[in-house]
Length: 116
Image (cartoon, rainbow, N blue to C red; front, top):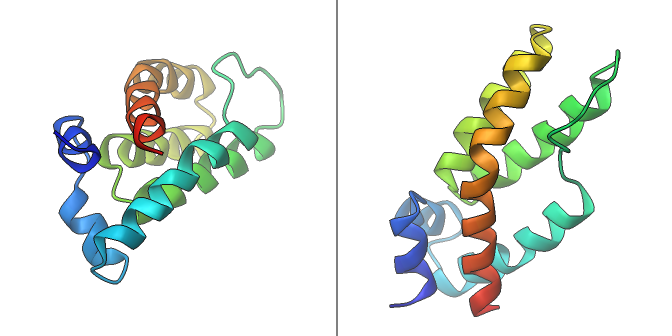
């Protein structure tokens, strides 16, 4: 089994991601390898608690964009929902979605790191 097959098993739409990134599987993998580093630099803490969610929305929106570009579908859907909930002033629901997706995110990142 290779990384792309493992990612498919985790719900990643690998074929769409490759198509989105010039149709070149090697380039897609190169971009995937950058994802864990991006997350390490800007992740959303599941215990966020503040009155101004602007920064949390900004980070979640950036992750949403990266996961969308890479077709990391489960993560994209979750961060899309998190951004929408925070913009609707529903931080508790956003935290719940984040806590549910973090184990999946960890599996995807671990898979990518294993092959990097």
